[in-house]
Image (cartoon, rainbow, N blue to C red; front, side):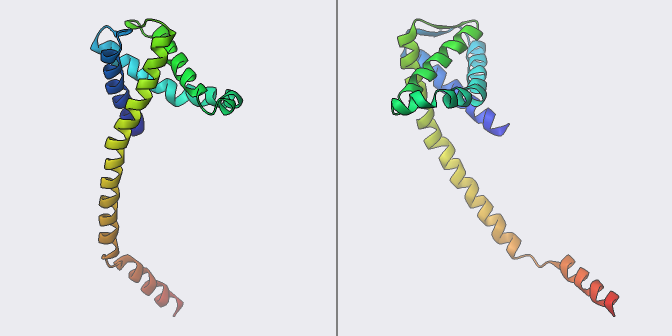
Length: 150
């Protein structure tokens, strides 16, 4: 659930930036932006991996470039599902999908990776603190087992 929320927030920012950069992608309101980002996140999580597996031979032959077409078609699919989200034509969808991918990678690199390093440091500190604790329960159970054997 946490990953879905992070992906959706990144999609909100990326869709907003792409709609500003490209005149052919129109988002009518902030509610439409939110719904579009949620739908795009769900499609990217559940539908995109299936399509990529089915299209694997074509993607292999094109050295991965067909993924850009898959992303453009999925963006058009989001347009067909969400009212208030409009894409002018396929070339706009293709450029928009390319920009979405680039923006997503940039945000992921600078936001998520830094947070992972931060959480790794916190976990290290927790592990060090746990190692310094004396396990009283373990010694108590060992003493009881010895007394029962005698």
